[in-house]
Every structure is written in structure tokens, then in C-alpha cells.
Length: 216
Image (cartoon, rainbow, N blue to C red; front, side):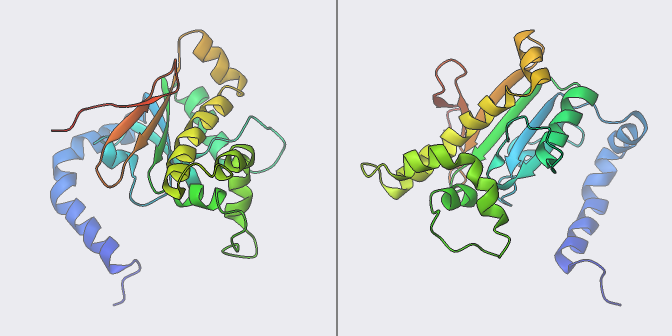
């Protein structure tokens, strides 16, 4: 009989049944009965190499995750259009009452590369990536036109600038701004280097990124 799912997913689920589920069965049962109560929402890229649950070694129910191309947060625009990231934020802030919002970027981001390559051919007639990344047009043009930087430097610079941009957009959401001002919600920026596993966090005062843990 042909598998209804790809073989590697079925074998992964089999491993989950045999190894992880027995060890965490009580936790899963509790989550099913009591619901989820994460304290943190992580807005991450949909890049398969940067799963927040893996990076932060988190257990089920510990973090609420929303992923999109280049981990962007759009500005507050209740205009009747579809806004999946804004919808996830609404649920996390108003229903789950999270205490922290983390925007997690990463090195070698394809979405950021697309923002720096506006003349490239769209991947499809819909050009959904191009339209989404147009959120960064002003800063992408400024960084992309800097001839004193190499291509890698421009890429890394925009990856971090985009995180600061998204945090600024978070503050356009009235409830988020109000909760932050009241000290009930904190906003964080972070960037992970895929090749080394280093995690850098943004200083809220200066905007600079610093290593969170010195690796041996």
C-alpha cells in the first residue's frame, strides 16, 4: 500500500512514536487538556534550516511560532486583506497573553537576497515573494546601492536591519505598544548564523547585535 505521506515523514513519525512520545506522553496529555500557555512568540523565517524549536531546544507548548519569508512583520494595517502574521500576533497577544515577542532572522536568508535583487526574474507569475519583500524596499535600496560593501556584507547588513524594521513595525500595533509601555511585553531581535550555530541578540538601546553565549 502506498504511503499517504512521503516516506521520510512516515519514518520520522514512527521514530517519534517509539522514542519521544513515550517520554513526553504526560506533557502532551496535559497540553491537550489544559491548552497552550507559551510565554513567547517567535517570528521566524520559513527556511527549513532555522526551526526555532530546534535552536531554542524547546518542548511542545513552550513557544508559539509563526514563520514567513524573511521573518518580516508588516505594519499595522487592518485593511480587510489577508494578514497571516498579524493574525498570529493578534492571537498571541490577546488570547495567549505572551510576555515576549522575538523576531528571529538568520544568515543566508533567501528572502533578503531577493530584496537585494529587485531585477531578478520572479519565481512565478504571481511574484508573491517580490510583493512580500517589497515591505523592505526603502532600506533594501539604501543597502543595495552601497558600493563600499561586498555582496555578503550587504546581505548580512539587511538581514539585521530587517529585524530592527520588523520590531519598529510591531510598535505600530496599538496593543503591543501599550503593553510594552506598561512593562507587560518585551520585544526582542535575534539573528542566528546557520554555519556556526551562533545566536546573536539585539541590544534594545543601541540596536547592535551581540553574541548571546560565547562558544568554546
